[in-house]
Image 1 (cartoon, rainbow, N blue to C red):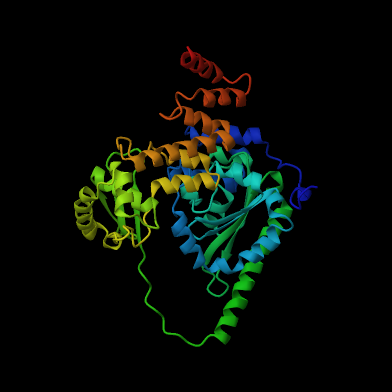
Image 2: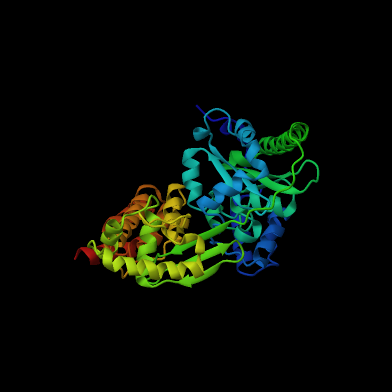
Amino acid sequence: MPSSWSMRREVSPATSRLLVERAHEELLAGNLADPRLADVRPLVRESWRRSLASAVGAEQLPRLDLSEAQLDIYRRGHPLAGVMQMVRALLLPGSPDEAGVVVAVGDAAGRLLWVEGDRRVRTLTGDMGFIAGANWAEDAVGTSAPGTALALDAHVQIREAEHFNRFVQPWSCTAAPVHDPETRRLLGMIDVTGGAEAATPQAQLLVDATARAIEGELMVARLRARAEAPRRRASRPRVTTHATLRVLGRDRALLEAGAEGTQTVRELSARHAEILLMLASHREGLTAEALSELVYGTAATETLRPEMVRLRRVLERAAPHLVPASRPYRLPAPLETDVQHVVSLLDRGAHRVALSAYPGPVLPDSVAPGVELLRDSVRATLREALVGEAGVEVLLAYADTADGEHDVEVLRLCLAMLPPRSPRRAGLVARVAALET
């Protein structure tokens, strides 16, 4: 049965995709006066120029501005959190997993806070980084409905090749800004992304109506809160401290810690990196014997204890909130790792972004048993996700990494996915033959 969105499909826009693609190539080549640019809608043409001025790459992945933990905290306090049920009811009626489109809600800075809808479409768009936590502002990824709607503070539709980023050009999208109902301050935007049906006049009407309904609901909720809640003295905002341990592709880990905007970076010794990584991976805590086994391979508690004293001294200066507790050894506050970041991206279907966030194995020179186990697990998780779900372009990129360059199965899968006349087939065939000789 067709989805409610596919039933609203209209004829493709008058400007052909081919003309827009050629105009896009001329723009990227620096031919700003090329007459073919006149074939592009003025709104899109001006957005392309702004994208160039912001030095946006045509194949640039979006920044991940919010980690999973930061995202959860941030969106719980965002004004649009209270209207998400309304957004789902209006834009994803029926079965959201089979809606044919994805619906995104973002903040005024262009960061996507919620991305929901059709499971298959979410998997495909995740490859280009269209996931919660990613920054889709115009100066981050170029022309797209979410970013351009925020840049112009107006509703926008962008169709396929009109996108500045080549990875996004298979898709069409419609977005509208959402404002504070009293001050008219920009709060964020809502976006619908999918096939051609996501950029029709009907789609624009529905997205605009949803934006107005959201603003009305925000006003009603505000009036209700004023009538029911007693006056309260404003509390001092709490300063949130974040910490991240970077261990991928590095022999000496980096610890980033501090409040937002004031973070410091400290390089750790190999042993301290191993201990901290094991504690971050075992949030429930570890006995001295268990931690010794993971780090040294034996129950060397007499060696571990003085090392823990030295680590505590380092953390007291660099990240006091992370000084481990004893019996069992555990971290008193969350410590994110770039390993968790990559796995989270894979879970959200952002295969291309996950691959770009994986510079190499976990602490490559470490022989600590716990590190070796984690290293192998991350490698296997990444490979399994890419082989099972990623597109051919992402698989080809993986085949060029140290982990994938000798993987015959991956190379053969790329050959099976490439078109018969693809010029890249010859190189892959030669690589497979060399590996099997």
